[in-house]
Length: 137
Image 1 (tube, helix red, strand yellow):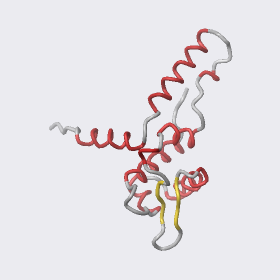
Image 2 (cartoon, rainbow, N blue to C red; image 1 turned 45 degrees about the vertical axis):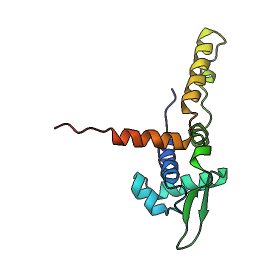
Image 3 (cartoon, rainbow, N blue to C red; image 1 turned 60 degrees about the vertical axis):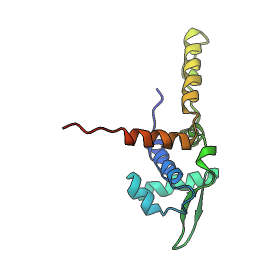
Image 4 (cartoon, rainbow, N blue to C red; image 1 turned 30 degrees about the vertical axis):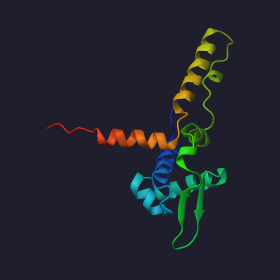
């Protein structure tokens, strides 16, 4: 079954924090960790991995930090997810070549379609969600 690991959950949270801050300068590690409740030592590992992919860039020093290397409107959530978790492959989990395998392949295609939105679109959805929260007493 497809599920996100802690690497995926924390990595997505960190990328969304960087995407939300895009164009406003660098974010320091401690600020990302605090905002998204990610253990700092784990965040360092995640960001180092994302640096290698070119998705994130960093600047060292007192005024250094991290930022998304491209506009969130140009970055696919699916791409980020697959960088963190590997390719989504449901059909390979079913060995036979029959209708069930075909069903898994169809599900894989649909999941990828749903996840193939930009980080900007995802942030907009989150803003709409945050604005629609209702409190009941």
